[in-house]
Image 1 (cartoon, helix red, strand yellow):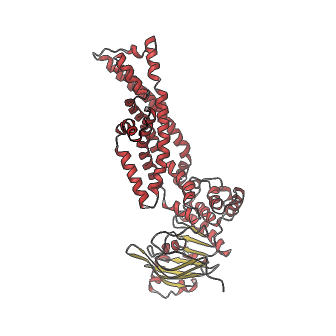
Image 2 (cartoon, chains in turn cyan, red):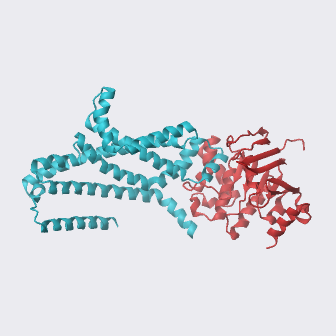
Image 3 (cartoon, chains in turn orange, cyan):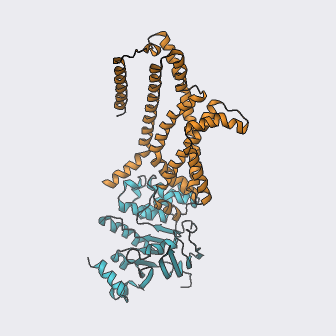
Length: 259
Length: 247
């Protein structure tokens, strides 16, 4: 299944390239040709962005998950004031385009707090806040999708609020939210390309830098796109694997019901 | 009997918005007594027992359970710490935990039993409901009847003084109803105090000390089962009984 998808993606890429070759465009694949010295140096340079992209993605996913989880607790609380804070947070951070919040954190925030931020932490902060609003909504939706009977059974057994959440509700909610969380992971990975504008040396930034010295944007950005494609395919394969492992018991229960 | 009743309800009223769902309910259940409540849907019978285990709060009158007076108010009440066992129509087992874990969770977290103690207790009750061999399975792998018996065992693990059953067999396939009723009958024979909402009239005849018929939020008729089934006083009761006994 997975291998088939990868093949299909590669096939499409090849077709596009062939189509390109047929046009009057002069191709200059030598800039990223691993068979020649210059191409090898360029490829290494382009791929040196990958660790940064991965690191930034991991940091953003981790922070936005933690933050989103904490914020979602406000949305699940019974107090009106907690709801208002939750709504406010989600609406604000969801509405600001991530590029704008990157600029705001990098150029604006230092003026406000009088401390300069490096590009990496600035980008991380901006994207994590943006992502956390979505994560909060995912977690809240997951918890609210759990049947009322689960809360009621917990209550009549004498379990308190925190025990009910910890042992009964969250494990089920997390399982149900997994596809949405995986989706968010892929989106976050691609969104890290935005921080190229403030100079984090991640995949797109490397491409930009090379494109202006080599004057070969078509070939270079094609390779940049390929890098994201490969990264995303790896991430989605991982998410599917996790889903299969965590969802196995729910599927078993589904089977028993239909038997 | 000098002992105070396990449940005592006096002039209880409850509304959902404008709709009055409980009207002037008076009910007393003494220790060891088995009460069966029947009535058409929407008659308030589920609400009545949900008030006793504080999944709902009443707004007027007084309810005392295990010598504790329950608070009135629009919101749901306090947590009774597992003193009142409740069995739901939909079982409400925790689907992501094994049967054993379903049973040990509350004793360990609420009663502070060690895992070994809780598992011993759990196995003891699983044997009583005759499914000790299913302990390591997930609820979804069991039949409906087995799931409901697990739910009963789960409540019993908290060693409640009172068990409530809210239509425990209504979600079951017909061939699984009797195994669940047998379990409840055994529990009744052991002297457990219980209030059971059900439409299973054969079962009611067998276990009930007191039959209650509710309609429109009121207790219309209450009698010992002999009189209740042979010569009920009220027309509405007669009509209801003839409807559900006719097929």
